Length: 323
Image (cartoon, rainbow, N blue to C red; front, side, top):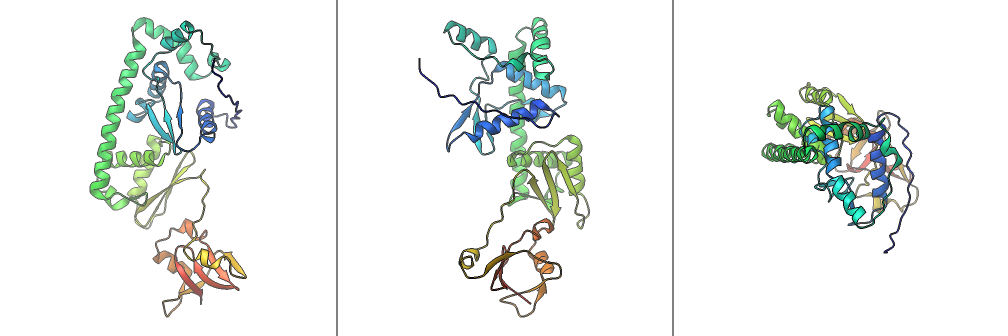
């Protein structure tokens, strides 16, 4: 028998709210952390898992994206996830394993009916299968229909995005969005959130986003869900994942200045005035940042490069000097 390398990874779920969802995310993060470049993660999700997923999403009141259940191929955190067994039932897999004398390890928690998925699998699905023959296969066929409908919605979103130039530098453009009907606007927002790899917001949060889009031009509201955030600035919508650390990008002048004696990185202070080397008069740094369309929440993080105590350049703006 061929030996297979095995590694045990312990995970700890701190948040007791929605243990199943949090544990699932932790498992994927642990698996992805072991992957090398160009590797694909294959999981043994099967037809019964797909049926359970669709029913759980249905009970939550999910829309088309949720009812499409698990896709066969999916990108998560830049890694590719492949589920080759979605069309095969649990019974078929177990029959094959028994016939070929293959042992498997059963997770003890699979019998804990305090978890909704286990409750559904152990107590409800067997009864439903007695009443509706071939139920699992029929449910997974419905998931496939929903998946096809989801693709059509994505195609429509892409059509609207390209027709109205709705995305520039990963930012949604408010002027274009307001020209769409509310349904198509919502479809574009959901599609963009999916492209970013973020979790879908609830219907209530989506309505808050629509309200943000229609707010006055000078309004600066914020919409949050889970660990995600949406802000509006200068008729653009900025999306953030608060779990992703902001890593500042150095401007072109950093490499030429960093090795000079007495090189320092500082950050702006209130009331500071600067002068662009190609301009005659000085301006307040606040005004310069406004004219450069740099959002307020990014201004305090801009790196200012000093040599011998004198300002030489500002990240994202170029060569500058203090007035």
